[in-house]
Amino acid sequence: MSDALNRLDLLDLDSDLADDDRLMRDTVRKFANDRLRPHIREWFEDGTLPARELAQEFGALGVLGMHLHGYGCQGATASQYGLVCAEVEAVDSGLRSLVSVQGSLAMYAIYAYGSEEQKERWLPGMAKGELIGCFGLTEPDSGSDPGSMRTRAVRDGGDWIISGNKMWITNGSLADVAVVWARTDEGVRGFLVERGTPGFSAPDVHHKISLRASVTSELILDDVRVPDANRLPEATGLKGPLGCLTEARFGIVWGVTGAARDALAATLDYAGSRTQFGKPIAGFQLTQRKLAEMAVSLQQTQLTARRLGELKDAGRIAPHQVSFGKFANVRAALEICREARSILGGSGITTEYPVLRHAVNLETVYTYEGTHEVHTLILGSQLTGIDAFR
Image 1 (cartoon, one colour):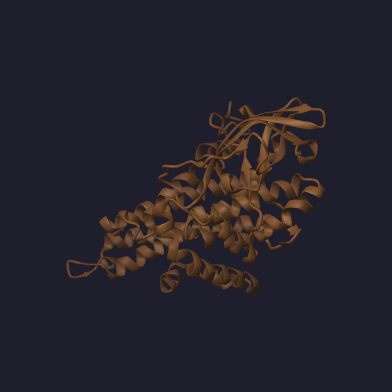
Image 2 (cartoon, rainbow, N blue to C red):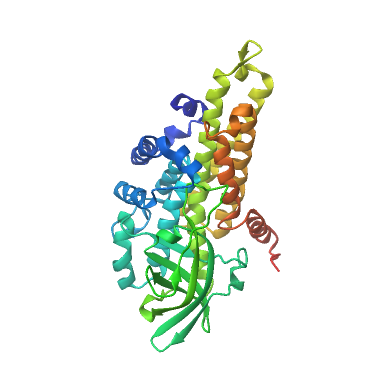
């Protein structure tokens, strides 16, 4: 596989990595190959994941909320965080979701919009993986249009009473704290709902075809009472949750390059060893054309991720640029995995090879944290100055 990775770096991008970046990338790659890769097939087939155990291992590795500063977080660069996302998603998108929901949604919401008391209480434990968070925005009837959410919070003295449902919540049933967004008379606000609060439950979603190595839940809030101290004081309106989504989408832009790279590397190895008509199928023109097109597309996704990393590290990244990355990279990664499957033939439909597993996972990534259609319209609005959402 290492030889295949080298051959796929046609533009020699690896040589431009700074020493610190390469060390971090290689450390996480080794952890992923030694700890995660040997088990991912079983986890995916069984629809299980030792998420709490892995969260603590990720915490010990220092990758949970690694791009945040203080409170036990590394304060790494955005590009370093991106490299980590790529290495984790090279094993499975569900594992990267565990990392990014923890760090870029739950932790970031508290970091960006929470009080100092909330940050001190939650972030150090979450950075260690000892505490797990989730992010409750999407609802059964409110996905791409979060402004139509039905979850409501009503003041009752010094408390809030929250009622509603959230759906497709990664880490939901594991979470020690859920960041829940709700309508109030003062607009959309965010609340920290702790595990065990009366009226709060998080049943898991079963029978998934995609992201099977990930915990997905529904959040049920039945007149849940939380104190005003659990409200995120700096989050007002939809800018709060949308800001968190932009943060998380950045990790997706990088992560999917890992999934595509892993699928293509496995396919390149297979094509070199699979013999038909007296020679390896890698020697046939049609196969070489597929491999060439996929390799070029892969490097284009990596270049897009690196450019967005440069912009984010410079403090100049804009939401539409992150949408550019998700629009381009998820689509390209999905197309790479589908084409790679065709080279593997019948072997490509089994979990012996990672290709179709990556493809079905990417079907979910294509939809979550902004559907492909939503990012299309964001780019269209940026280009024309006309909002086509309504």
